[in-house]
Image 1 (spheres, one colour):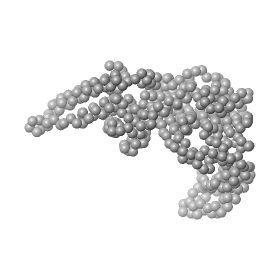
Image 2: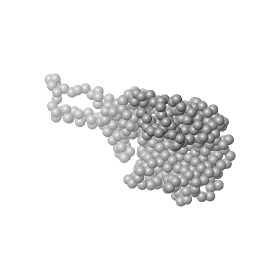
Image 3: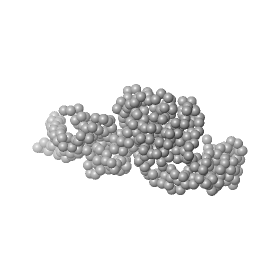
Image 4: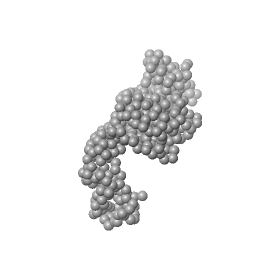
Length: 427
């Protein structure tokens, strides 16, 4: 019998021994269910459910709509459970239980019949259901058999853009979560966590997609180093240029091509700032860490969330964050254009401000002249993804007040000079 079939039978019978996995199979036998529905029915943590689904392997599959259902092998497993559970108790003709010897014999006989029937059923199902596409997927990804179709883009990114040789690793999908971000106007956000391992290498990768477009890539290298499918440029600038060309082909967005073109104006790596039209490039170097930041600018206002950031450590891309495609500009009007103006508005706003901590209403406090910080960072004001100029001013107090409060942060809309919020902070 082929090794793949032996593995299927091993998964089938090891799963039947585990009560939680039997329950999952019974639920899916009744109807397909989503991950959340199974969590509610089982009452276990998401990590435990993910563990059980991974161990069920070929017995379950995940459809494009996110619902899990039984495979042919899973259906055979459920039939096997029914045969065992519906078997009547055997008693002697005088109404007394059979001896241990006879009970053992009958149990072995039932198991033999079940195994024979299951083998026959699975053999028939294998011949009629397995397709060429499934065989190709099994040979290429092996460890990724239980992954959903939603990981295809992530794998393509790792292979084509980062150029990781995924065939050299044992790959595991740690988590795959999807939510609609109400604070971003209902944007669909999916976050995948992938582990790549060999005997000497341990890597975790997190990828975030917003509206099905790559928004963030984060690499955590715990042991060893990356295995690339292609030789990587030795010089960091050449590495960035090559990466941006691959990213442009992957993302197929005009702004990526413009960002790549700006790199031709960079002669050497250092702390520099360039601007072309509505695009600004900032390069920051600190030790072995180098960041390339392209951000949108209009009428002298830098809209930093609408940006692309690449962070390299020792010539390895550790982080990629892309908000350029998602955000747009709500207004470029500035009624509060300087730090000094923002700080003055903040100081006036906290006069008469009170807070309650540890049952005490605090109203008498002293704000220091220094230190003080004012950060300009456009943010969202209403539903949607339109950025509005915004200041966040932090005022420091002369000591720690009840609740450990030692500073107050004031948010100010730069277009209207209105105070958005006042927040106390400690630590």
